[in-house]
Amino acid sequence: MEVLREQMSFLLEQGLYDSAELLGCFLMCAPTANSEIIPSVRAENMVLMADALYGKKEYRRALNMYRQALQQCRVSPKQAMGGTRTPVQSRLPAVNLTHFSNINENEVKYKIGLCHLAVHDTRSALSEIEGIPSKAKTLRINMTLAKLYRMTGYDRAATAAYKECLRQCPYVLEAIVALAELGTTPKEIHSLFPQVQQSKSGRVVTDHIEPVRWLQRYADGHCGVAAHDYKGGLDNFNFLGQRFPNNLHILLEIAKAETALGRGDEGVHNFEKARQVDQYNVTSMDEYAMLLRTRGDHAELNHLVHGLLNIDSTRPEVWVASAIYWEMRDDKLKALTYAEKSIRVDERHATAYIVKGNLCLALNRSEGAVMAFRRAQALKADLRSYQGLVRAYLAIPKQKEALCAAREAMRAMPHSAKALTLVGDVYAHNPDGREKAQKFYESALRSEPGFLGAVLALADLHGREGRNDEATVLLQQYLKNWADDSLHTKLAQILAATEKLGESLSHYQTALSINPLNEAAKKGLERLEKHMKGVDPDALEDEEENEGEDADADPEEGEFP
Image (tube, rainbow, N blue to C red):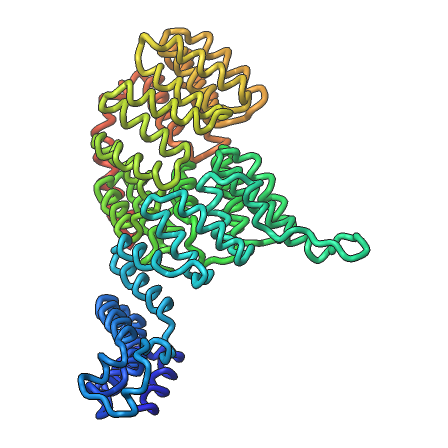
């Protein structure tokens, strides 16, 4: 039997779990494996068999076998030997046979927890791993425990567990990211890093300075992003990008921070750079897909999604990107199916809920949108979840709840012009609140003069109130410093409304020269040209759309398998 056990251990080390399980069946039924075998040996055999089952992803069978192994570990000699005892056995102390076993009970408990986790029973997994004594918790156990606490909503316990991970090893970078997202201050995280040492002569040991410095910068970057200070986070990531050129993770963080700041060109550049570093990377590619959709780059989005499907279809990012693709194709029901599929793959992927919420809004399912955005907010609150929640409440309509959500965003991002603009959007929805809306938009522009979202919102408000001249002056003032296609498009719309068709035409053309993919400018220009020819642009719009769909259906379908 010893030979079988050795060979089974070898097979497990080699990752040959099917062969190990087959051999385990013989080991468990070997002639000596009967009621007289000592429980510790039987337990060792069971753990080997459970390891094979876990490797085969037969988690419930493995769970049952691990539990039986623990029970065998706790059998006393008296229980194992039965009622009859020889004179020699009578002189042996009745101690627990665990003392004679090679099994680490705490490791088996951890494996039981992993089995519970694999079958999505997080509460049982947490209960099992919590039972391991503190002194016996390795780095791996503490990391799993921290993730379980976070999954079950025990943020304070999760924070403590992640801090313990950093005490055990300061280079566990995912613990730094998690602590930042949980609201831990940079100073607290810095205190967990190795302190700079000094030699006997009083000189600082330089070997310890550099790692500590970049770890601190890394923590500062993620804390900045978590606190919605994207500019501060970006500064730290740029520093790390210079220190570690072509670092995939840092490039992705830079791209996301640039996107959050509204710097679409820089965001695209860094996402593309990250893909050049590793063309098979899937992480954050759904964020890239969202950026491409916003910019109207249909061809690149199609290329991205097709590539992701060929890389790894088991990742949630792939199905989020697919949902964005089908939303771009105006097949919102299919897009929603893919968004829900991404959630089934990973129910804690926040971006999937944001996309689902936007799709629910487009399909007039406002209540479903509220639930999706709330879930996204609980997982990882950012401006997009707040914006979506406000839009969903306004669509129901629930003005009071929308205002509460907007003010919640303002509290979470007290220095954000975007949050101030969001509050203004709620007031602008009600004719009686438009004066307050104007004050919030103007406050946003004082806070961040270059935030064009507030400029466009204020210009739109002026237009709705019939103050077209004020809207025109505002937009022309900003166009002196910002050659932005969205500003030209908005000005063209205002000018068209005041029958200044020639000027409107010029601004539509300028917008498209800056960004040929600007859909609003394309549609506006098309309507304007019909209007200038004396044709009602609304009369033929539906008919032409239907004809366009019929003509383009087959070729476009071939783009995406």
